[in-house]
Image (cartoon, rainbow, N blue to C red):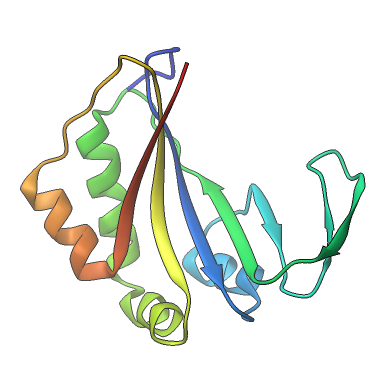
Length: 133
């Protein structure tokens, strides 16, 4: 799936109340695109300070799509993560969450097979879909 204006943007997002998610990301074999730790001072993406501190740890990982179908992209990601089920389980069992976040342009659509949905569920991964104009 080439990344055109109508192609979905896909990321793997992990949140946790306190864990060091950069080390988790490395353990999973990924490189974080965006991250912060619980307790760090808040800031904008450009680095301008904001009031308060981060309430939880967060990491976002861009998912490369290439020319694959959306379903194939998700299945490939699930296949890669299945070897690390215990890491994923530990995140969710200790208060964290894991999601595939998909951004679509308004008017676009996508289809996810029952096989992929089942595998996401088995891994404890939520599928989140957002659209923009």
